[in-house]
Length: 332
Image 1 (cartoon, helix red, strand yellow):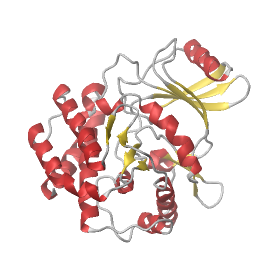
Image 2: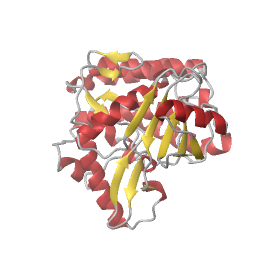
Image 3: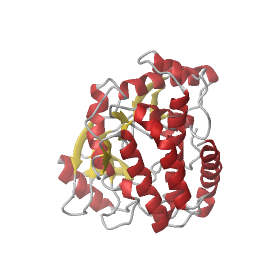
Image 4: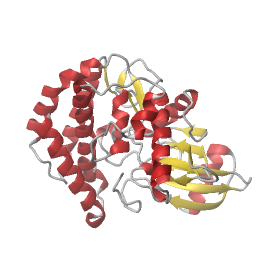
């Protein structure tokens, strides 16, 4: 459901020598590193699976260098993730344990998280039959519904200031910042001029006033971020990578599990969601979903500016995002 290559490189990923990793681990959790393996599935932060000299296995996530140019919404992402893990766990969503969050590290700069290592299998690496995948989508729908039971006091990204007192105000700030970034990083041409994109999204945004409470939204639930326990009947072990979470409309969490396609009423994801919380896909809801699709597809296009993906790896994703964005804009 996500066509991104798990090996795609990004210049936002840091490269640390073994001794630097070991010293960081010691500052964070009091143990040095006996073995380290870089995990390649991420696209912004550098991630390693570490074996510590006290026998523990942990995952270290390290933000890009503070001086590196990023998209506006990407600033301080790990701070949102640090907040989201315990909130998700409190709602009954299976997540890794957050062992340590360090902000503005005095040696390397930037932020880091240390998480318990998972022994499961990422969903995008599991060979499962249709029935097993359907059962997992049903289970995932329930977890997304539980995730959305967490409510907050402000809309948007409070860790970097892209917020609003209403969901419409926050959304327009979020997408407006992204369109400003498109002007700063014109690496990937957009299907329409930025001014026209603003006008289309602002013109359609009135429907966002249907949302009257800020809900926690993960907004990155693709199969690579869902770990499975395959020891018996496949089940979800944990949902990871909460760094792109924001406070807004819980409907937005239906976008990444159905990336580049429409939501079908017979999708087990919806049945699983509705088993936990009511969900009606009204005409207004479908219009809101298109606004969130537009936001995600714009992210996938604009982020190439600061990240500078290798062209051969990025081209399939860029083309899908471009085609899908054009369809959404036409509907809006």
